[in-house]
Image (tube, rainbow, N blue to C red; front, side):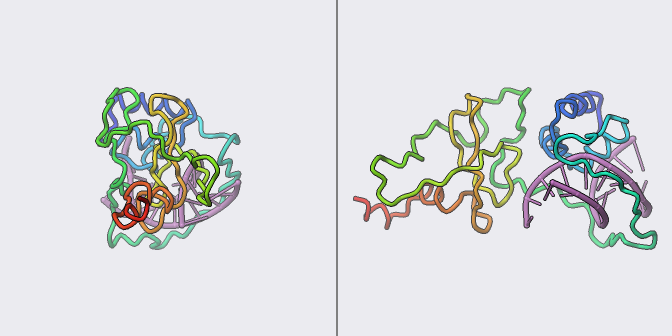
Length: 179
DNA sequence: CCCTGATTCGC
DNA sequence: GCGAATCAGG
């Protein structure tokens, strides 16, 4: 992917808005967060100084000079973007649909009375924060700004946590039992 | 382990 | 110039 003027401009914009490198990489698409960081440095954009997330004071140490680089197999695609794939995350590009349609659900309601079922709290993650092992259960209205994802840990590459997994798949056995 | 940015250096 | 590999820190 080339660093076109547009992409560079978007990079500058998002970086100045305080988005993390990985978030920016996700929005640009086709680049890794390393690429973003590298570009930021090359552009002499102000780093993250000492604020917020990662100060990292001095970095005087230089690793080795010999051959620390394996080079055997390089170039990993980017990130496994299998499960949730809105294709673009384009905030600029409307894209009302995104592959899977999210309708405001009425699910995580623990009913009243609470019959032993506990609804876990969510980590309120944003789309860009999701990884292969975070629950991708959407919560809230996507049009609302409080929309987020569950984000709890999901077992071994499952798209959902144990709780939402059951809501999502509803095995027939359990259905019968429910009746 | 997840994430963050910073740096180096082969390409 | 680019960015993967690596480092360093939360």
